[in-house]
Image 1 (cartoon, rainbow, N blue to C red):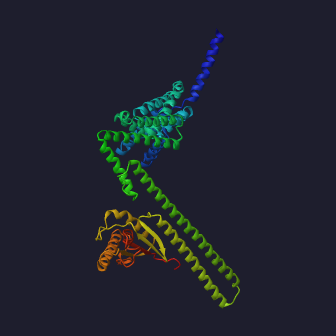
Image 2 (image 1 turned 45 degrees about the vertical axis):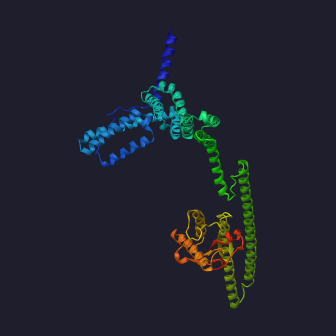
Image 3 (image 1 turned 45 degrees about the horizontal axis):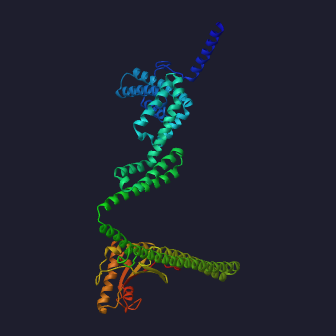
Length: 515
């Protein structure tokens, strides 16, 4: 019996020593206070900096009670100092604040040692946006403060027992916050679509949206840090959610329409596509035939694009060959220079001339390269039905086939804005460029009226470019040629349409091959 008692006392003594070792050393206010000191503004500001640093180091949550007391005592000292109250009272409050802050720092060290995983899980939850969850976050934060508060009270057993549960709660908050940030909006859309009777009007689309949402939710549960893949899946889920929403709304509208109204609505969409493709109006055909007509037009456009790409490739190959020729010329000049290095003054003059020729050749090559790069770039601005872009010596010609004017008028209509915007971009590619705008008509009507109309239309384009600050008025000229320069025969409608055009001739400020 005596042996058991002695054993119990020995174990109790060991546990007591361990408990004292884990607990933070606690100083009591008023203990070891220093000699009288003079309170200055600098001292107040210095201690205020310590309080802020302690808050940044999270002492307000790792040792909430001691930190609160330190903050309160400092607040009293600061208020008394500002009011000029008794110096002894101020010193006492400052000493208390220092003691409390020291206790908070020691307690925080113990908390960081005992709760490293909980502290990290809390940080990750906050980074994920858990504080936006409101009450759910506040409840777990309160549990965390109880853990650190128990350390302050030397209730180590409470902290050890409850730390795993609080850690799991923060992990759950993190996952909840990640889902809220990633698929919260998707979930709201799906819920709204369901309220809007999607199960009735678009059941398959709704089921697909719901499935993508659930699959994304499950993926996040298993892969909470796979940010890129989560965003990809969330975007896909949002696509199907919006699809179900649009389909539900449209089905409701269709429910209110007669069969003929439904067909006319569908036909109108097909007509708009056909018009944009410049295809014939095929509403007199079956719907399948109309779709075939659209597909044929798209195929033609694709073929045209292939031809343009082939032309671009040929131009690029031409540039490569030109570069090789110039390189060969430059190399020859360098070799010639090498053979003249040791010659007389006359030879030196020749050397200088060759150097100038070399620089001129290099400059010409660079200017030509830049001009061709811009030429290729500008070609890509326009569709084949809008404009032809080609080089004319050191000039760039934009043949605006797609520009439209009211019959017999010279008014810029809104349908030309997109094409003219591209013309503005093309001109803007060149610094200090000068522009000539040529107006051309077909042969219908008198020569005098065509000359006047072509000049007015050229002036209308000129005024549009000046008004939109594309080019200074001193840098642009408008000319009307009437029907003098046809591109095709005026005997056919197609030929006359081709002859009715505006040509924009752009001359760069620094011409290729010139200084």
